[in-house]
Image (tube, rainbow, N blue to C red; front, side):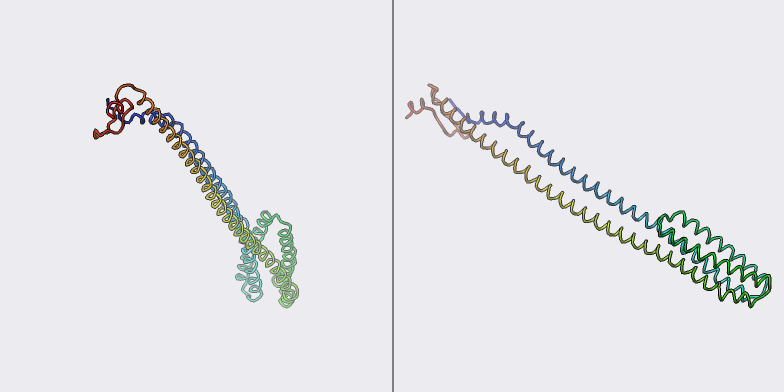
Length: 287
């Protein structure tokens, strides 16, 4: 009687019984590891987006309200400078039509200055900004009053010398104070713009460092997780291999006991028909 690989059947049964459980454990651990990695990536992405929102808000503030303040202030100062030149031209020309044209242009520029001031008051909530705007109003009023007085002397009373005297003694010093007030406001807005830009750059640097730190932390945690999962998998596989080897030994021993207990002659052959084993009955019969 031929017996071939009798001990392999219990082993195959043991492996078949353990395979679904092993696959399930591995799948659970891999799923848990990937879930942790995905959660870390989502956290890093969310933090990066949150920080970028802050940077975007800073840029909007710089390019929006703060830049609008600086632009309005520069425009108002520019119109005021034009009026200063017009004021000087009026006292240098004698043609009535040319004077009327200069006065009309000056009135338009004054209206534009008033519009810019009104807009600035509506978008400048801080106490320092309101103080600087108040200084502009305070210095503008005596400048306009002295100029109008000089203009009356020149145009209505035909007293050029008195008009020039008012221009030299009152209007010019008032004009300088008025321009200084505008320069103070423009300087303050420029400083605030630079400060906002520096703060935005600092926030961006902090956001970049935090993002890099979170990425490094995610990599470290991912490595630790992968190491832990791999180690557990290796331990499980090693334990299963040992169990399977024990099952193989047990199956081999059981097969030996069974074969030797059979009273009939049993001879085992391999695929090439070479005798590989025999039982006790065969030994007794053939020596």
